[in-house]
Length: 359
Ligand code: F6P
Image (cartoon, helix red, strand yellow):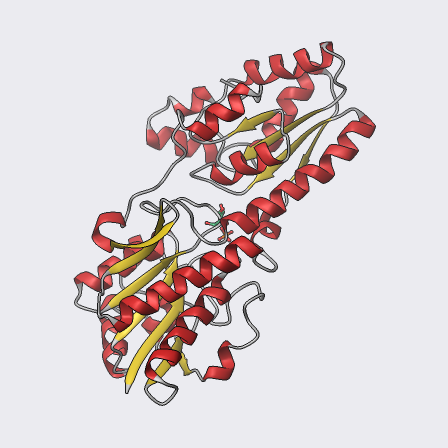
């Protein structure tokens, strides 16, 4: 009897349940329902550290394809604290190894984003058999063209910009839609293009507020009574970006606004006299059903991950490379962020149709 653990870790996203379902169905189909036992680890690595898990049965994986969130629960367990004992002197890494052994697992299937993949690699280094899947609305995982969750979040953020378009036109206002993404701007870039934003600000391309204002004024002068900005949570001005890391962090945390969008809105209003509003869809972007694209991608990834388990090809993350599902060694991807290349074709596309990046 094979015993496979499965956990979801980090921020949730659409498609987690679809991927879990695909892993389980493939394993049950291959080994038979009597030939494999699947153990659900509760709330991500926290469950592995503190021994919270439940025995799953085939029924648990039915009817979940379209469900948002994760049936296993999730939590954030920062990688940098993994080697730090907790407030009760619990050594997390050693507890995770102990629980893996206690559960008599053949392999642990891990669904997660960047931090999760780093811990998956740590567990691999510690001798555990792991296979992982790339999830996140941020699409910032190295070595995969797409992560599941991304496209569904793009759809939601695009819909927000679409809705804002109608009210912005009626009132002749400037609107900022703040899109998730502290470190990378994939989501903002795609939703911005799809929603027809006039200005897109992403962390990879620091902005000059004077250039943003110039674009808005130019639109006003040309008779356009509204402007829409898609701004990433992590958008940063050229001045801040030029600061040393520590000073930059301090300046961001001392900012007298709830988020960067509100600061930009104030600067626009002061400089142009135009009414400027901010909309922050926030976690709305991570909620609800996965779209059709993510259901398919999650299913492809889930099947490929189960195949790695069956072939005992451990220590790898499944990935989408040139539209084919592949497997990449965890040590090659752990800790690497996939930012938007500023000279990429998609950025150029936006520039060529006149979208400003506030440079
Ligand atoms: O990593 C996914 C993500 O949604 C980011 O886009 C966002 O900045 C962050 O998580 C929010 O984290 P939390 O859910 O912990 O507030």
